[in-house]
Length: 328
Image (tube, rainbow, N blue to C red):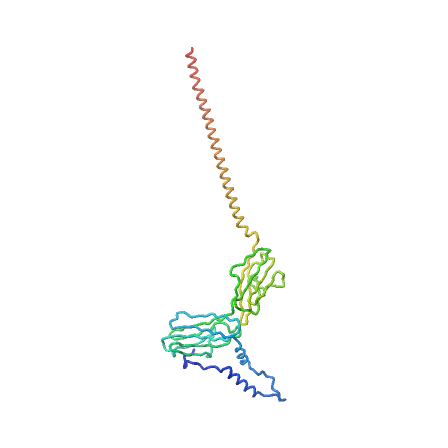
């Protein structure tokens, strides 16, 4: 942790000065017994890295904080290849700038005092410059300003993300399908496809006629799977290798039998058949019940007629006898 020492830390030697020192050392290096120069490399490793850094692209990013910031500020940065990086944090406060402690961390590890601190008015600036040349240097770089409370700004470095199909890809048994992975505005060094066997990722065997990998474009890869079987369904992963790390994307494949789409239709047909059968049974039962009712009424009518006829005969016999007696 460092307070503001005159508001400017000592600068590291410039590349030009380093190169001059190397040249002076090279002219003074010892020779072999035969007068020829020893077979030693002219350029040391740090100088090589410095010369390589001059050929890298530059990345500059900044974060602004105030004494009233309630939450840490984060910025995500995507890097595909080695780069010279310049990170700047600025902190505005109404208090004494000399009382503010400034530190930098890489993930949870505190960085050495090779960063700059300066001030203008009520704003404190800190700058960290470095070169990212491998995956170990990727991660989170944070600046800290400690006054009454601590304020933090974080730069998150990561390799490019891959883009596949967000929703499951659905196909049918016997068909062919193509899985596609893309990298927007980036060009991986290498592509690899994996399938998931339980919790284990297995490289897709391109030697089999079943799989065909197409990498016509450097930022895109396609996996064609022919003669699909139901067991071909599952998780597939496309993996991209970059100079500064690796990235992967997941695609879900669902392989259906042709009977599967018919199941809803068959269910509907079954419901319709059941409904029609129920209606017919109800209709038949109603007709049968009505027929029995009509037969009962007809029987009652016949019985009523018989009863009426019987009553008529009984009434006619006394009348007939009465007429006979009157005739006599």
